[in-house]
Length: 290
Length: 317
Image (cartoon, rainbow over all chains, first blue to last red; front, side, top):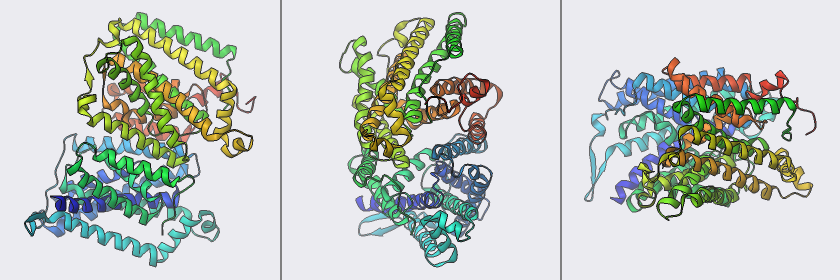
């Protein structure tokens, strides 16, 4: 049982990382704490729900195609929000930035309820991913392994882009020293928009990939955003590798904690977060994305 | 930037008229209106406690509902589990909230800005989760109900008058605090903690004091709310109540003593009337927030400045 939960924990950790990485990238570059990030995740799940029956239902390729399309849709919505609203409050009081993203939370939640209703929906799992692996005398569901691998591929691609491409260099420059980057002729505005779009995409595909594993409902936004904040804070806001470590810690603590302290698993996570925050005394800012 | 609370003759007149208007509406508007009014006034006190923290202390709390919930549960648990008389429990509720504020605040004031906000969120979520999951003690998600008649069995109008009186006294105390030497150090630390430290103040101790005072008033509001409903639910400490209070303060306007009250009135009215106009309250609220942040970043009270009811900034600070 513990091994199965461990695998589940790894999958959940990977999903959390995909969400938290977007959150932390956006924070690292534009210093915006995007409260609507969980809403973008939820939107990804709902768009996947809408797309799966249309695109080759039941097949693995169709499922992932639907997830990627959902991610692109979410990225488009995130970009529109960034260009139309968020752009007006860069440099303003950080509270105003938070409130403007909270406004987006209400809008997305309402629109989702409008379109899909208030009931929990479920996304069918592709047939090929329904089975179980038998190792020793334990049955492991296949789905978490596949999702973990897919997440790993996304992470590798993301780190590759940040480390080795020109876009990545610009991004790191903007994270390290925004003013200097602007002085050197980097188009800040474009970087901010691109990062917000990329972060939205990551949140969207995370929502889509996790959709068949649980319920899809309009309450996902707050649960997810709280978990993602915890991950980012444990890892240090703006720090990508910190977020990876934080996500795995939270994912595994949640999954394994449920076995031993069913009532306490969530409290456990908040306690870890509080201890990390107080122990590290992160007063000023998080580390940059590297 | 934040000034002392100064009462000009125009403001006194406005305040007295508002109070007379509220009490008249309460007496002659029927039971339904009285109930809506008392809920609004309780939320106004809650939002004002957050306003103290944000406007004067420059600390953005993302977990203010924790102290609202602790007040409600402090009162409710004292009555139901400890058999404390109701009168004593009314004092215990705010005290429990203050104690929570001191413990959590001591951790939170070690951090600044967004990390501060995140840690307040974590503290509130811990509170919420404990209230939600500790079935044996707190009743879990079903809450604690039926332990006393809602509103002590007072008539709707009488209870609303009581809440109005508590709000007025609460605001008077808050104004007194802000105008006191302590208030001066609170504003000083809020504006520039390093300069305040250089002047010989202890920023963390001042911040913790504001945090505790703020938690106390949130606890008073929470206790009143438990009396109002005759029940306590974990939601009182949940993210929803925190967001409501934040939105009230933002709508009313940071930088003003009255921001919390004005925001609570406007937000309650919007939430009450919106369903008659639209099925999409969330969408409407989101758009209103967007409009306020972009067009009127200092909220509705900054409109009063233009009407001459509020002294323009730059006067005596």
